Image (tube, rainbow, N blue to C red; front, side):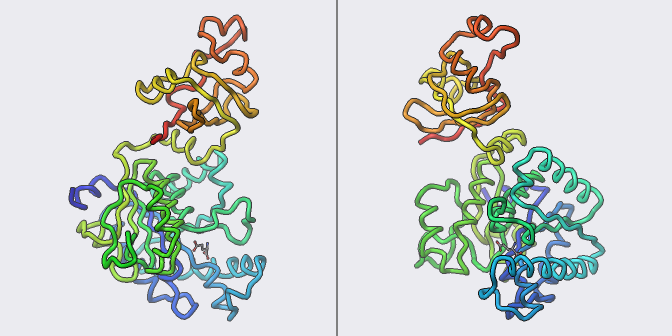
Length: 372
Ligand code: GLU
């Protein structure tokens, strides 16, 4: 299908801008930002809703204070991010204002997407900004984020932002043309439909010398986006700009395009934001029921329970070979489930008394993985 057709239904777009695109000689470049903002403003004028994720805070700070990034300690880098973030926003603000647009800064850490309330809160803020015609400009909250709660790179951050705002397309702009299958190839791959070990290996290895690297994090971002049933494009932001890619459906960059089914927002939350607290092993019949017949998981098919979890916690669902076939929210605690595993629904009431649920994991609370 031509690009134009594929991108036809897209309305909401996250555009991720890498540091290399907006710096010159280690300093933030107004000229570069102006050009990118011009493209983004044109997209918005075409009725697309755009969220910008931008890197460059640390470079902006160290550039302004004349410090060499590679010599900085972690607290110094965080300090540079504090200085640079406001410089960065000032530049974006000036550039967007030329197009009659205000911007709103949102700084996130991984913690913000791990807690449901904060995640939803962030979503409401994004939606309110977009409704007001304000362009949300996002970065990681580098100056306070510690290792444990960091995304660590803005590719991953942008995939999560795309999930928060339920964008149909994530465009990662950097100084690479796209994803190259082979170093010797002249052109990047036009489209990738599946991310397998081969793609991961090429992304992590020497294949990334076509640019400043960082292809591995882009592929991880693509995995999140593709599992959600949305689109991601890696393109050279220096050369092409985002406008032609979208509006004219030009074949530039590499398009990552998984299945066509959009994962419901609740399921995305389970897939990417909830941490599993344990696992449930199920027999072949139950695997069939949940994978092929798309049914809920009942206690009768459960053969094993590991970990300590409470009702409402996420658990991995394993087949008898130990492969993870899915993940979902358990209606039962690990202790309760150990008691009722393998039992028919009618016996459960006798065992647990009072209130009980028909299903261990409801269909709507469960995601199924493709098990090779
Ligand atoms: N958040 C970092 C910054 O603004 C950049 C991280 C990245 O480039 O992936 O400097």
